[in-house]
Image (cartoon, rainbow, N blue to C red; front, side, top):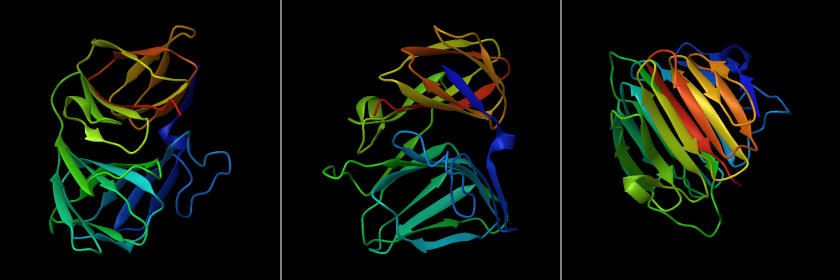
Length: 233
């Protein structure tokens, strides 16, 4: 089953220095029916103005994945650790209790645009504080996984996160590990097809809940960039 959540249905924020779209309840945006999906707690697309910062704050025990779409960011924690990432790179932060984290748009002239996901972390797992990887120009890249296989970022949860980049007319079938997944279009239009349902169309910024399917087939109607989050638990 596929249930579409369009970009227009998402929460919105515009503070001038920060513009955001929230898939799930976040900050001032609250919907009791959308507090997350399985272990996926947050999926935001945010734009920080030149030189803007998100001030230090603490987090629950989550893995925070930042996918930089435009610009360059720096991430710091209260222990003095820091890492930078630019467009075409992703950073994974293993949030720890009692430690605060901040984010900065390094550029004084250009905006920073990025996707941010929070995934519940298993309490007994400990991973490196910061991890970084580059995105490759290929139809499917395993971006993050529980065991870090194929050079992916290592999560503290049974989740597989795929970065998809396809040309118009390309078709891709991805096997799923369990009963739930979430598909997010970043740019472009795609038809998502499962074994039990016909095609569902998603365009730029749209997402879709996927339930009780063994695989999903993506058919790009235009040049496409998307994320597929495989959430078996």
